[in-house]
Length: 140
Image (tube, rainbow, N blue to C red):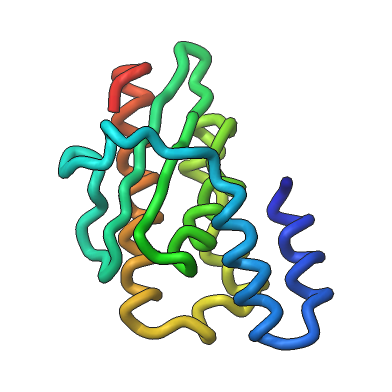
């Protein structure tokens, strides 16, 4: 799935209730997150919900992102972040304007301030780890 496809699907939804259901559905499609990685080393600070993110960088500079949360809505948001960054280059992670994409989805205006703050914390975390893994591939 691509950011453009997500935007198209969001625009097909009749209202925000349908968009939330679609977001939850996207979260259910996230690949299984390894239970042994649900520990503090992978926990993202600044989120109301528990959020774990594991990012790896191949020798070719391609990111692999796995994430999960104890919240269905947050899992949907993680799915969007995964669509934006998983299997993309580190350069893409540094340059992709995920906030503009979320603005086109009108997402932040329909999230609570706490969720918006958490979403920003996750994005900042992903970008930070992406830059760090570029310096030391295959490491978290």
